[in-house]
Amino acid sequence: GGLIYFYRNRDGYRAAAKKADLLRANGTTVEELSPRQMVGRDPGLFKVEPLIAGALFAPGDESGDAHLFTTALAEVARGKGVTFAFNTRIRRLVCDGDSITRVETDKGDFTADAYVLCLGVNSPDIVKPLGIDLPIYPVRGYSVTLPITDKAAAPRMGGIDEDNLLAYCPMGDRLRITATAEIGGYDRRFKPKDFKVMLEKARPLFAHCADFSQPRYWVGLRPMTPNGIPVVSQSPVDNLWLNVGHGHMGWTMASGCAAITADIIAGRTPNHDIGGLAYGHN
Image (cartoon, rainbow, N blue to C red; front, side, top):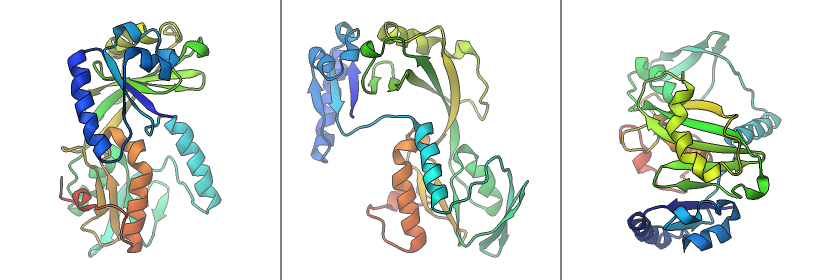
């Protein structure tokens, strides 16, 4: 486990090391590494060593395959009686007074005692007719997944090239690289040239262990709020709760925000202060 954050510029590394003091003061373990120590932590970064001024290692941070996680989680949920309605388009939320009475979809109506809105960048459009204004806008993010050609020489753990804002994560026989934040509306279409700069930055780091001739491209839309903080609270509608606006930290915050949402609906007090997550706070 753990993630490595490496810096090519000495000033950038020093500034990051100072910020790490704040994390340590709040209970997070962060180690400062020389380039050689970085390679000691992850031998797969040996090609990077000459380029690096220093690195930070956070043993408590994690990386992984979000698709594998969510697929496995769905199976666990099914075993507990959860029913999924995939490929279903919501037409509208029908209200009677201050409560939702049903959800109209292209596959029939759904009714429930409590409703949770968690629809990423599409969330604002669904509840706008109810007078709920969510400050969420789509920001495009790009990823490339490459076949690993030499597993022994590939990174053992995930990390970030902080100067290029390039994140990477080994996933079995694949290496995933992510970068870029682009305000571009709801369009998910892309061209291979959109990934040119990203691949140029990644090639010197991983050309020795990954096949750059077989890239698999992907574009997603991050549901960003102005301050980067999600909205996790009850809505102005009595039986509608919000769990939206997680931006690029969706998987990171998913389980915690789900637990908070469950607590709020059940009338329990969450383990954390959630005042800053309330609707209208953004």
